[in-house]
Amino acid sequence: MDKILRADAAGPAFQRLAEANHAFLAGAVPLAALSPKDTTFGKAVDLALGVAIPVHSHIAINSVLSDYVPKSVLGVTRWGALATTGIALAGLLKLNLQGPGITETVKQLWRK
Image (cartoon, rainbow, N blue to C red; front, top):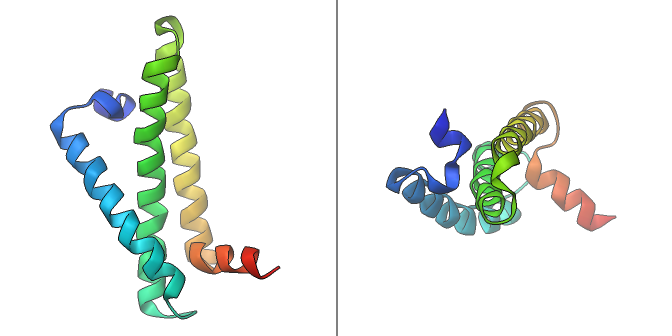
């Protein structure tokens, strides 16, 4: 659990995960944007983005916390970041499984 809470300093395995996640997002976001509506491929990409985006954000926000939050409250803020990551993960999962999905939602925002 400590490695998840301190995702920015959890060691080489987490660093490799972060790098792979960056590369995945760089390729998956354009693929998702170009995928036709209601395809199996689009749904699979949406589900993968629904996990990759919160993981990316969690690792990045922990770097910010390490740099700018006083050590006296760092533990509490890391738990808050983990809770926020969990809520985001659950929300994106619900959007992907019960709603139109991440890609279609973003496309709808651009159309209006």
